[in-house]
Amino acid sequence: MFKKDNLAYNEALKRLEELEKLPTRIDKNSGNVKDMLDNNGISRRDFMKWAAAMTATLALPSSFIPLTAKAAELAGRIPVVWLHMAECTGCSESLLRSSTPSIDSLIFDYISLEYHETVMAASGWQAEENMQNAIRDYKGKYILMVEGGIPSGGSEFYLTIGAHGATGAHNAREAAKDALAIFAIGTCSSFGGVQAANPNPTNAMPLSKITNKPVINVPGCPPSEKNIVGSVLHFILFGTLPAIDAYNRPTWAYGHRIHDLCERRGHFDAGEFVQSFGDEGAQNGYCLYKVGCKGPYTFNNCSRLGFNDHTSWPVRAGHGCIGCSEPNFWDTMSPFEEPLANKLYATKFDGLGADKTADTIGIVLLSATAIGIAAHAAISAVTKSKD
Image (cartoon, rainbow, N blue to C red; front, side, top):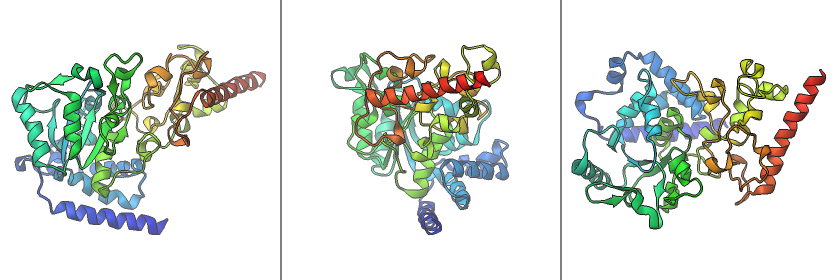
């Protein structure tokens, strides 16, 4: 293991040394990362603590902390093109709407965003020209990040944008052709999201369905800002795509179930469940499985990272996980306030992530999994009542 880590360290170090030779694409007047942090009242010590947390999030050994910090400092060397498709902009908002600028959001600002409709000043013809120029000028050198599902086929016209009347699918295909790496940001871009929910009137598709190039999915509604920034930093560090699960999600972020790391897991094991919202169990922080929590079927790191400046997340706030980082969650996980085992007819369920070993997983395995969890909940409750 030591040799393996040492090899990865040396490869990352060599990669960063090569990137450091490239010119920064950030306006020289805006300064470097140190200046940016100083201007926002963030000390070098705080920055290194953030680098340590990000290194742990990326499942890297502590020896990588200086390299992670260096990768953040070199973020301005690689251009990023960020496209918006059919979505609510919530993924961008998860970075932009911090109550105070977090280091994650500041690093996102520092990244060389050549095109991003939400944060750019340009509009109309100028905005469209900026996108085309970025794709042309940085051919084969830019990271493409796409937010939102993509209407396709005979419904492609539902997302027609720009002065030339190009469709979203057209722009995404053109941008993907010469991208150095491609990331689908959020569940809509990763799996279609709510736009693709039955009956999917716009024939919304995930980004991976309209390009033959590898796409790394970073799902969530929205994903944690660390998962977004971490995806870029991982690529800066290694110059390669990360290890992924069956749904092309980085295992460093989506390798564990919500249930595995949930702060309420002890109550599940003890048979202590919220029976209805607002009851005594809810006030005592009991497990939310019986009121619909989909944590046992959902792979994500929400319980570790949290949201709202890392202060909370849905389960801590009192509502069960709705499985938003799983494919087709809007159809397979609803109703969100009922356990999956309560469904009379379970639809095909593909949300087993890292556990998926076959190409397709259908109703039998879903039923066995759901019933097994439900049985545990029932038995635990009976055992506790006898105590």
